[in-house]
Image (cartoon, one colour):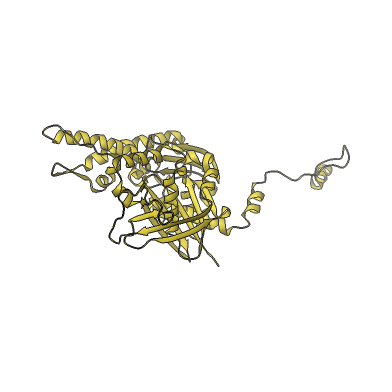
Amino acid sequence: MTTPVYIGNDQGYYGTKVVSRTNGKFYKMFIRNMVVPNRVGEITYNNDSHNIMYREHEGDREWFCGKLAIEQSGDDELFDSHRRRLFSPTWFREQEYLIMFRVSTGLMLQGNQEPVVSVALPTDSYIDYKDELKKRLVGKHSFEVKQGNLPWRKIEFEIKQENLFVISQPMATLFHIALDRDGRLLNEDLFIQKVSINDLGFGTSDVETLHGETIIKRQSFTSRHAMLNVYQLLSKRLLEFTENVDSDGNGKEYPIWSLPRIVNSGEISFKGKVHDVSNLIQASIKEVGEALIDEVWNRLDYGDDITFIILTGGASIPFKPFYRERFGEKLIFAEDYGIEAQFANGFGLCKFAQSKANNTNSKGIIEAAAAIHQEFNVPEKVGEPTANKKSVQRIKNK
């Protein structure tokens, strides 16, 4: 007998965030979103579970995943992978996507478990590619994984058609806030009010406005106002900064994929000296944040008829002050609901998987609720009044 495990798998630009529930307990996992082929041969690492290798079968080509892939990548591999993930709406067709999905899903499974999985697509890609993504993921998956110095182990699981759900990424956070830990409706207000969900990722800023469960406006500011733009500005400013502090005027170029460490620490090491660049980081965030909130403000018509603005996504934290200043008490911050902002979509996907799997009678309920037709009487003879008896009685009493 198999045990269901509910999994929300949110594969984004920077990382794959997975949330699962099994035997009444929730688990979360983050893997840096990078996959490259093994070109160094047999290697030995310390027993770090984040050092992940993948292969289909013994003797097949091996792949490095996550942190290990970043460490072993050449600059050309990083650039190519980042570019394809950021600018291709069909990234899920790539072998790297499938490998990352298998590894991240498989590591959440133990023993004889049956995965019930929800995944998400960016706003602009959802309608066009949701069916193709389902076909890509449905079926049996068999592969081997090696973590640290542990031996290779085989992982097998099957994604059944009825156990796979695809929704848009901003909707995932709505379910995170609106559903309880068992996938039951918790916050009905979010389904009867007008709500705008702002999902800020590394390369995309997606905005969906809903009234009830109906999406009345879907917008994306892909690659215009997102964390990527902060990094692009910062890269330019760091080059100018190093040119100014170097006596020879020779600056240093900082590629985008090298900047997360600098953003976290607030400093760089240049020619043997450590420099505080926190002011450059804050200036870059401020410039992009102000441009982002101006565009959201205008596209939402100042938010006058919107009840809630839900802010979510891994890049939402640095932009939160700009949203709070503009929208005030209308703002709902996903991180205030018990999990880090970057995991909000994954948690919502996990809850949604539970909701869909447990609600076996939902189809009939939805169809009944959606009916807008009204019952009426058809006269048997021409000229017979069509009004009901109460109406006829009122007419006679006049």
